[in-house]
Amino acid sequence: ERFNYINPKYDYTIQSPQGSNVQIHNMMNNQQKDSMIAASAQQNAILFFFRSDCPYCHKYAPIVKEFAADYGFIVETISLDGRGLPEYPNPRYNPQLAQQLRVETVPAIYLLNPKQNKVTAVGFGLSDYGTLGNKIIAALTRKSGG
Image 1 (cartoon, helix red, strand yellow):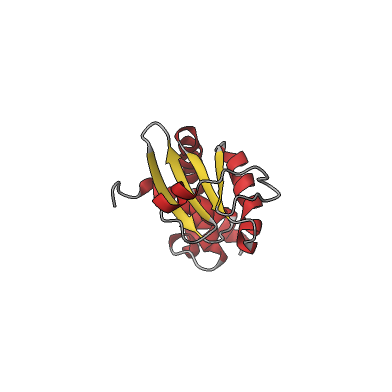
Image 2 (image 1 turned 90 degrees about the horizontal axis):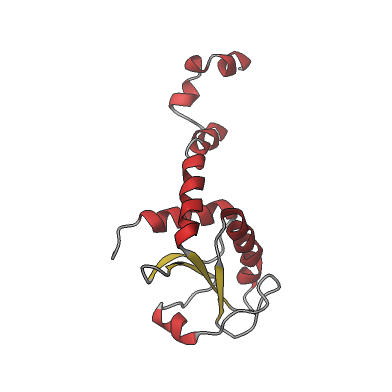
């Protein structure tokens, strides 16, 4: 087993990763992902829609906050019931925007590009930190107008 780590060309799991090796294989893209997310934070803000009585929103808020801090996103918080969460005590109350974007499920994450005046749906429901990043990349790479 150790021989394989010293001589990777003999390790067939590198060519066809299995089990925990899949994670290692996927990490090779993580630097690209990180720089793409960080670059997008320069042009986009995160719109975080929630309700104060939503348990998933309470679980998601610290993840969103940490993620935004790590990558340099500004987070615009919009509360559907006008009340805040511990991490975001002073949200906006904007039912018109929620209606316009058809936000029916919370938590909901969108990207807002103020220069292009463009809003892109990222995802709905609770995600973990890594999945949030993947969803943002998916949103950024999605074809426009689709």
